[in-house]
Image (cartoon, rainbow, N blue to C red; front, side, top):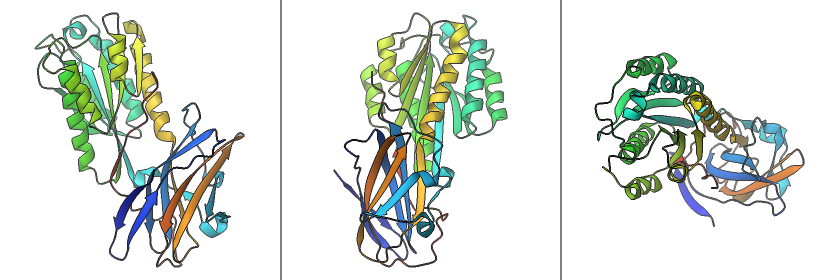
Amino acid sequence: MSTPIRFSGRALALTITFGLTLLSCASLKLQLHNASVQKPSNVALYFSVEKSNGAPVAKLDAKAFRIFEDGRLISPFESKQTILNPEVAVVHYTLLLLDLSGSVTESGSLHTLVQAAASFADKVAKRQKIAIYGFEGGADLVPVTPFTTSSSAVSAGLARISTRKSRDPSTNLHGAVVRAVKVLESAMKRSTQPLRFGTLVIFTDGTDRAHRVTAEKMHEALDNSHVNVFVIGLGAEIDQGELRRLGRNGFVQATEGKNVRAAFDEVAARIEAAARKFYLLSYCSPSRAGTHELRVELKVDGQSGGLSHQFKADGFGPRCDPKRKPRFSVHRVRLKPTQR
């Protein structure tokens, strides 16, 4: 089913319909997330590439893709096709939510948690904005550091909680998730970039004990958001079923404290891999008027796939620069949930 989206500019107003068409025998999945068409003849597509098992396909260059208009292959020399740095239109926000209840702060686990969180932040902040908040039994989140790309700011924030004692030793997990979603979506809303990823990473060693917010209300907040969720669980007290359901994009369990850092590193690697499957392909269309069927095809290691997109070229002309920043509509990207 196609979705019409209207783009407008000073000199151009056009309606674009984009849809996804997969080859029936394809083993690669190309999914279109947004498109930009603007004068003089710029076309840009933002899409993801996965194998049939959901594994991301990364590190492809522009030459790997073949571009067709109306069934005819366009020469790469004519189209000047290129892969743009996604940072020109895409921003990633990750909020790390840490359980600072009594079972963590009074058990001697806090030092290990702080080290693991620092390692995680160091990896994620290289490509994304990261914020860290904590929670315990109270209704409010515990601020650690606001969204930043500065490793020193993260280190300073974590140092401040390294010897922290809980004011309320209970666990307000459900309420903290609801509040964290609001913080994350608020940051995404303020962004100047049109394509926005929001990821919530939750660490906990238990279940909700405060009963301030029901599990149903928490899941409702997540259902209504555009946030990706990963969960790290520690120890024997956790309810694996509950945390797997909460971790819609991934759940990792650390059976004991010495495995916490490895669990954080695994989630960081998953987030990085998910981001690297996205491509921003830009080219100069040879069309000068009318509606056209665009198809992008890919073949890698004997596996193939493609996607289709319809666009209007009315008013198109020469002097196209494929490196020009695309004009995407505002879109919050949510990753496909993992199969559980």
